[in-house]
Structures are given as C-alpha cells and as structure tokens.
Length: 244
Length: 244
Image (cartoon, rainbow over all chains, first blue to last red):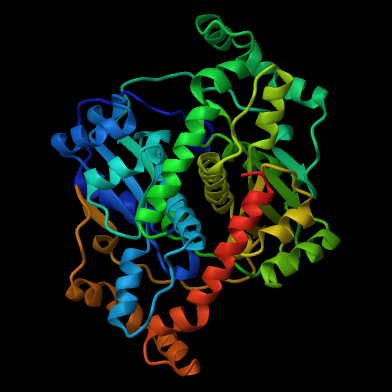
C-alpha cells in the first residue's frame, strides 16, 4: 500500500539489467490478475535487444526511454492464441469483433498494471508510453504481431536513476460520484482544477506556449482535436486490418 | 507481492460494510496510477444503496454479487469533466472520438486494477463483472452517466465469505514472447492447454453441456460468435450515443 501511495513514474534508468528470473517472476505474478472467463486473451512481448528497441522507437516518437530502459514490455490484446486452440479442438471461434477487442484490452491492461505494482514493490521504476495506440501499425510491424493481436500498452522498466517529485492529482471528490454521476457546476470545476492551475510548472507551460490558459496548452498543443481525429481514423483502420 | 501471488476472485461477501474512510483511502491510493498527460480522464461511481444495486443488477445479468456486495464500483471513461474544464477556460476540446475512448479506458482500467490490488492487500475480496460492456446502455441509465462518460469495468467489493481454490493459469511461456511474436505450433497449443483440459471441473463442463471439447463450451455455450456480434453492434451504437 505504501509503495502505491508513494509511486512516481520513472523515465531515467541505471545502465543495469533486470535478471530474467526476476522479470519472469514479476510476469508470472501479473498473470494472477483477473481475466474474463479465465481465457487470458493477452500476450506480452519482451524487448531487450538494442536493435529491436531501435526499430520500436519511432512508433513511440523516439521517446528516449525506449532505447535507454533495459526492458520494454508491450502488452497486447491476443485473441489469436485462443482462436487457434479453438480451431484445433473442432470449435469455431467468434472473437474477431469490437466486443473482444475491448475485452482483450481489459485483460491486457489489468495484467500490465499488476506487473507495474509488483515491479515497483521490488524497487523498479516504470513508465507507460501513451503512444502505443498512436502508431499501432508500426508496433505491429516491429514486433511481428499476427492477426487478432493488438498492442494496447507499452511500459519501459528499469532501475531508477532519478527521484522526481510526485505529481499532482485532482481531489478525491472530483473523481468519485456517490450512487449517480453528479454533474459539475462551473464552481466545482474551478475548485477542482485550481491547484493544478496554480502550479509554477503549469504557469510556465502556458507562458512557453504563448497561451492564455492551461486548458489551451492541452487542446491546442499537446492533445489537439486534429491529431485525435487522425489517430482515431488510423486506429480504426489498423483494428480492421488486425481482424477486429 | 505475496498477496498478488495468492490472490483469488471472491464472489461471496460477509454482511459487513466497508467504512467510508477505508474506501476513500483505497480510491485515493488507486488515483496514483499512471494517467495519460496527468489528465485523469476517468470517474468512479460508488454504489452502496440497495435500490440502486437493484437497478444495476439486470445490466449484469442479475449476478448475485451486485446485490450481495456492500460496495459496487463502476469505473468509467470520463472525457466529460475534462472537456467542461476546457470550455470554461476558452479551449475547444477534441476528445469525442475513438482514440480518447481507448485512452480513457486505459486510464480507468489502471485505476480499477490498482484499487483491486490495494483492496486485496487490506483483506477485502473483489470480483470483476465482465458484463460491463455487454449492456452499457443499462448502466448508463442506472448511474445517470452524461455524454463522454462510459462504463468500462465494474467490481464488487467486500469482506470475503469464502476461500475458493486458486484457478489455473496458462504457463508463462504461453503468454510471453521474446523480442517478436512467435507463432504457436499445434504442438505448442496442445502443450499449453493440456493442464486446463485435464482438470476435472472442465471435463465436467464438457459433459454437462454435451460437447466434445472444452473449446466448444466456450464457442458454443459461454462466448458465442452470435452474442459477440450482437454485443459489438450494441457497443458501437452506445459509444456513438455517448458522443465517442
């Protein structure tokens, strides 16, 4: 519990390997996570090889963690293995659709997060790469993922070489609703985002980007509508291409 | 780590409440999970009220846990709050699309799983309800979820009133790929699924359902193509209706 409360994302790693036995134990532990119908419709691709990391890096916009971390893990939706088992057992699988994409994503993400919790408890540091669903086709190519396998989360893992401060979070009452969803008044929004907006680093973000508000840094610089629409289009196409 | 290794899903709970302070501490801990751009695009709906549980139950095919657990948590993708903040800050949000549905689902699922790990460490038991994406419209109605809010995972939580055996998992090598995805030979599949197929409870499943193989119990009884296609169709419609 304490390591969960104190956690922070780690982007800089020591040049020190993670022993295979340790990694395998962490993976095995993570596979105890809940899974729909005990079907385990996920796979994990372990990248340690420098050349493979170099191939993977552009898919993640060359974020330095990919090449600097000793281990990169790509957690994938995997309906391929289960479907192959079905076909070998005179059963006709029907998992090439949106429902099973979402179910597989759920399975894979519960495993990914359980891995992270276990790894952090052992002193390792992790970073999720939000880029995984931006360029899924590049990851599919780099990791040779077959039909019905789809990358949904990537984490870099290693021994921390930094000790960053914990970042802010919204207050509890901004995120939790009792019984039904309670619409936010404009005063609620002002109150919940006040701390975030007061932080010097966020004020600096606004100034550096020549914007008027922090929200504009999100909508006009970091996560624009135009980018999201292009990525949604691509994501839909790649989902189809992978058989979903 | 030990509680992760020893974990099992709990479906029967003591008639004993979870103190609000304890639940809030667990939720607050779970909100330390990684989140894209520190945007926290999720919300959690807490259901304790018996009438609300009764309203929620049909969405989950009346699985008894919904009404018997002291607490039901519905983890939702939430782009509504963030978009409202943007609009109040002269910023035009562009998060009503597939990319942000997937990103929000990722955020929400990492929080859900972190909650589960923390809760189990405190001695609570949890059960994920795979039904959440089967009838999302019923959940949206029962919990009064507005546009850009979508239920992605439901867990029931309570003090365990059973001690079930741990269920089987596929061997590590069936789930992990080194560097690239390694296609499975038919011998691999036979080997990886042999233990599962050997279990008396699975043999009983086959007999009870009058099938020839365990895989047929999955494809013809538990998770059929016909159901998955109908659910995919509905899921797509409800995603659109919620603004994604």
